[in-house]
Image (cartoon, rainbow, N blue to C red; front, side, top):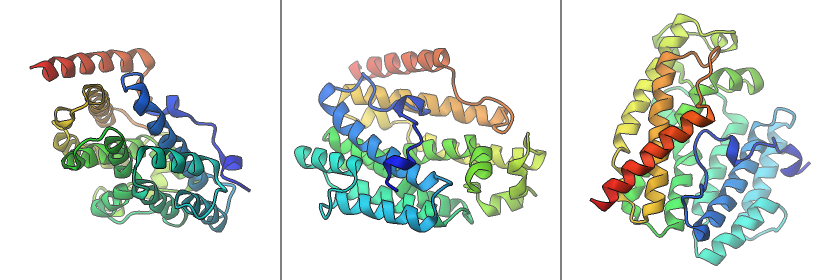
Amino acid sequence: MTAATLASGKGHKDENFPVASVLLKKAHRAPVMAFYHFARAADDVADNPAASANEKLALLGTMRATILGHSDAEATALALRRTMTAHDLSSQHATDLLVAFARDCTVDRYDDWPGLMEYCRYSAMPVGRYVLDVHGEDHATWAASDALCAALQVINHVQDCGKDYRAIQRVYLPRDILAQHGARVEDLGGAAATPALRAVIVEMATRTDALLAQSTGFARQIRDRRLAAEVAIIHRLAVSLNARLKRRDPLSQRVHHRAPEALGLAALAAVTQMVKGRA
């Protein structure tokens, strides 16, 4: 068994948010895609229902050893290591990400919002930090990036809450929020959300609003205008998706954007950011 044999087949075009879009300079897209391929491979390992926890942890260990230069065994990790060496980038973001995926192999419930945010510290925030490092941005931008990345992660968790429960019995909706609204974990297996579960979803979206508010000025902090435009697009898409979660039931209704909707939101966000960038 290898990471490749556990691949889901999902690619960057299947994600909710743009990954290394054509907005980025060509020189920056390749290192960002190397990180994406590594993250996708690790995520697929952690989420595969056919492999045992020990098998998954062993594969993630091989990925870590390859990132750190102790092995050349895993292809996506080897490609990323070579990319990081060529661009003088830290391996910390990659190894931080593996902490989250290793946790996914053994932890399937979170007690509270702070616990979920601590998970996002490893599962989401390293992605934004890596992209900023690729572009040579100031580490002062990390705080806003962390807030946006955590928001994107929670939106994905809530949108996929039913699927995650049914497929791999994993629940990212914190126990205390479920209990507060009288919802049960088993509600996630239904064809539609109960009123109690809907209240949980709305609260998760409301808490995510605060993360999106913290990252509102993120694009304006970025020196690279093309990256700033992509960040503005991602933020706008996230605001829209989060608002939908307050109105729609992810167990029974479509939440994610159709291509024309996403394109329209992206165009508006990009043009707005470019105008602000010239001001």
